[in-house]
Image (cartoon, rainbow, N blue to C red):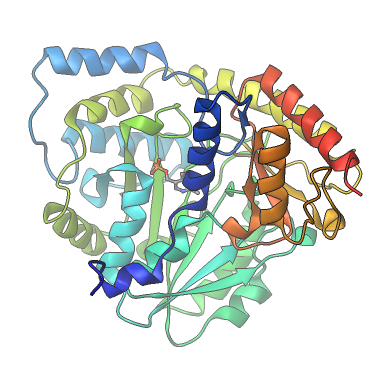
Amino acid sequence: MSVAAERMGRILPSQTIAITQKARALKAEGRDIISLSAGEPDFDTPAFIKEAAIEAIRAGETKYTDVAGTPALRQAIAAALKRDFDLDYSPEEICVSTGGKQVICNVMTATLNPGDEVIIPAPAWVSYPDIVRLADGHPVVVQTAPETGFRLTAAQLEEAITPRTRWLVLNSPCNPTGSAYTTDELQALAEVLLAHPDIWILTDDIYAKLLYDGHRAVTLAQVEPRLKERTVTMNGVSKAYAMTGWRIGFSAAPLELTRQLVKLQGQSTSNTCSIAQAAAVAALSGPQDCIDEMVEVYRQRRDLVVDRLSTVPGLSCARPEGAFYVFVSLKDLLGKKTPAGKELQSDEDFVQALLEETGVATVPGTAFLTPGYFRVSYATATELLEEACRRIRRFCESLT
Ligand code: PLP
């Protein structure tokens, strides 16, 4: 008999993590590898944030905190949501968790009954469907189109709704496309949702601070206040403040749901790390120009990658509004052969051959529920990106 529970058969290991690990292993063997696969800023956490953590250790802030997070952090989050989105949440409506990932796990576990449906617009972050399946729910994947900037339309939403729909997950800017919804687009989705009062909405705003060319972050609860009473506004410090390892994410949601999230967390992980919480207070309340500096570098890198890759024969991509990813179509290269003689029948073949034959690690679109593409993360040093783009071009040009 297998040691694994039946529910483990419903999920797959994260493909992003698997590819990153394979790239690491090849590097350890001495291969010259450039990894564009991880969804992680290459910047160090800003010094003032690290100092706050060191200070917290010295001050003895090394004990359990409230399950939902320290009052200081929940206050800082409420103030940041007001500053950044003009949203009014009280500290009691906020629950701090071990990264945005735990927020989503908590939300789905606390609310789904077997067979409940969760609408996930694709391309989508790898973890949403598996988190839903682990919580006994049923992911309903809606494929969005490049023509609408990979954004869900009101008509698509309406069509996907059934009597079993419990949640819509919205991720803007999106991992993997970098696509961000405008206020008008959110308003159009809101009109549909207002007519379906039993559906809740999880807005994953983890990349909201990483926007370029004057785009401003907007989130559903801000655009349509009537939906705030059934929206979970999710965010965290991982991406915006280069704090992936600190594991701080948070939800802002109606009290009734927040109480359930805190109850669940109290019987699973309890509070997230007290020292990381002190660092997050500094991040959210301190000077925000560290983000502007990172955003300017990301923007330059985005332009570099888009300019180089969109002119490679067989590849095409849009210029994304935010996050640090470019989602590149390779459909025109399917069926071709690599110099090593491998036939490219899928995006997974392409990504594997690109890694083995050129040392560039990326993630196949299939991992984001959208075959025919690969995702490049440009949260990597500019010189490495230049070299990676050269290798990708040479590889694509060498296909026959
Ligand atoms: N949501 C999206 C779309 C992501 O890409 C990620 C991380 O890759 C997360 C949530 C989770 O972030 P964390 O758990 O590091 O806060």
